[in-house]
Image (tube, rainbow over all chains, first blue to last red; front, side):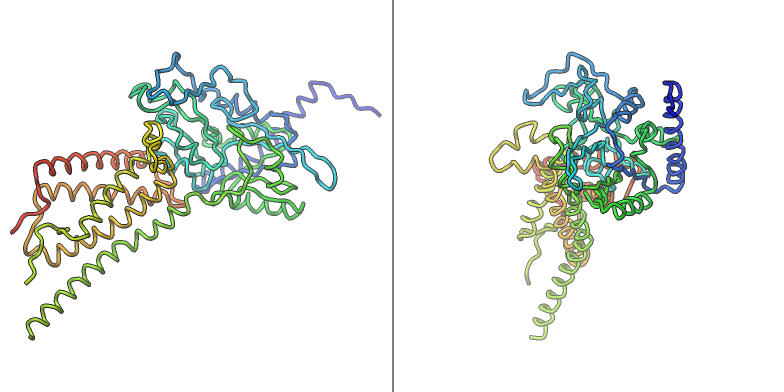
Length: 323
Length: 156
């Protein structure tokens, strides 16, 4: 018997599937928000079919946050300061831009002798200790209590330090918008940096991020980080797979699970500007934070030196008095 | 009997190290802003490191460690020994207060950078701006004191 599926019933089914995935995500989001734990997302690379429903949903959900630059742009002093303008290329979806915070990378790999195409949704990793947030000189990049790293477009001056310190070079700049226009538009600043903010406003309202809600394949799961890590490890054990994001840069809140090693995936994907890699990343803040421990010892060393000097002087004076 | 120098740091190597540390702190501190590359300073041979944020971050921390150690040494030395001969001048109090403010805001920012520490964003903006503002005021005060030959201390 042949079953005929009408367009209407297909859409109904799709919506029902999306709602059921969303329904499973909402309690996890709410639970984590209540407890103030860091939220993490799990991306099961095997499931992604590369349909870009998440990319579309991301753009639709965040359109109000996208830049609306004023043209012509202020003359940059000195001339070497690059203008980065994506306002005429808003439909670009093959890389990260100020108007596209999520894109799909494609990798053709060999799994058990069979050539397989894997699709990898890429966006901000939302590091547990994000260098973009910690090293921003103005506090324009913020980390929320649930672990979301976001850039405040009202404060950001577009210096792009966040992109330079990000191990994946995620934030993207749009010139001609933001606070710098009201300060010294030619001399300092160069726009605003944009990246995934994990739909912080939706999450605050108890919803899952738009990309998770829209995915028809249930590629992404969101929940407390420890639960997501446990789930990722369970899948990896089951499929003899690999995890990315658990240790990278000291741990991130975006965890990938793949049936092939990430070195292999990294070799198979196109990387470059706006197209992040999948290499192993050491904890970028670790050296500084190890030195921070030495700061506790420094005053003790200073006090010990001063007391030692005093003791030496007293001994010297006593010796002279005896003689 | 050896005469004590009439400044807290004296004229010994500590004074030289202290001034060099302050210079290192100011330079690596300003390098936290993306300005040295933009304005060609990092293009000067030997100064390329000024545009490498992780390098300047570590140098700032290292200089801060030396600064804290020497400050603790000078403070204890002053309180236990030199206070009998010298006292802080008015400009000395001003400079010490500014340095204390820089130290406090700096320590808070170091804590902010630790893994697992999430401070309120308003507090972070305040700390960033206060740290920058204090160093600007300190530099202005230090240059003014140098021009007017104002010393940190006076004799009792």
